[in-house]
Length: 540
Image (cartoon, rainbow, N blue to C red; front, side):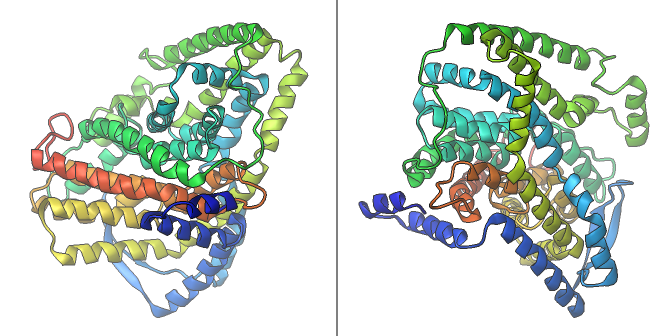
């Protein structure tokens, strides 16, 4: 905690929750640099795996096969990494762990477009426009809402919106870390909320269908199974997230004392900038028109062909959803499209505003963008090695299955069993990343169990999704968590620096309050008997 915050807190009575957050921050920041911490986790996991493997700990559970969709019995033991094969695996997979990291390609590709938009002055001009037209009191909610909605575009929110949230807040004269926190809370804490059906919906629905058919032959779960609840959740996350940012997170951060930000968002927009924005707007409309023409028509380039749709029907026995048909757009092309979405307007703005005079100015902006990724690349490399050994050791699976067995043995029933699943998932999420990977393992346990209690598979899936979203923002195992630490380091004061403790203390209020409020909303929805999706209720 920086000295200024300490002085401010000394002038007023500190609440118990503030004391708790201060303890988390101070204790966390006494730990080594995040890169050193992940390296420490890497070493500890290797030795811990060897110790636990000697004890013979094992778990048996059912899991849905990714390859066949069948439910299979699996027995898992802790795998020692201090063996010849374990060490060989660490050495031979090191490069692949780095290059295959979920965040690496997305960040590098997207930053090329964002870098040009920033270097040409487009982002600064747009932010000035936003500052001049948006009430200061609404900015936190708007950033959170934008984060929630960005989930429709896969991981784009992590790459673009989180750092942009910091810049937007700085433009309003507010603490940039509060803007970063608001965006992170929306993108990751509100992962399951949206006003549209996203790519995650058909994925989880398919897994749920397979698990449901264990006890309900022929049962099918649609991508819209949780749609009504998720639409309502979007507004809840936006309101609650904005409130937490304004009333809890930003007051704790105090006055910004980090590196000086080169922003002139408070000034008027110049004539050259207006001309540049006109050029950028035309370019953006033309580009969006081209993307729409590649996605909407049946023969569009960014959607499945009729033969691919027919193959899906043959293999799965159902017609694919519109989101599945558009998988080439949402899952496979979105990062490149996002890069062009910033690159083309950025280039045209520079030409119109006369900030780009030759190709050399374009290349200079791209080089600057890549140079800013240095710290991110280092932390990705080290964290990727830790995630590999933790996953390979099976320690996370052992923890998850034992907790699931414990919950089953407690004999909780009805709606309260679903609430228990929310909190169980939130805890397991700290050890196992990926929404689908956890659900592949937990769904064959809880869907049959809850079906026996009369609870529908869609309702069980909904409980899982709430728990899975709320603790993403405080889990170091979440793919983008180290990246957020690297983004935040840009705004740290030289005296205090930036550690994992600061990020966790900053995001913990969102995680706790989202979990509590979302659970209360879930209970209220259940007791009112409202449909959770089109034609879907909590009961079978």
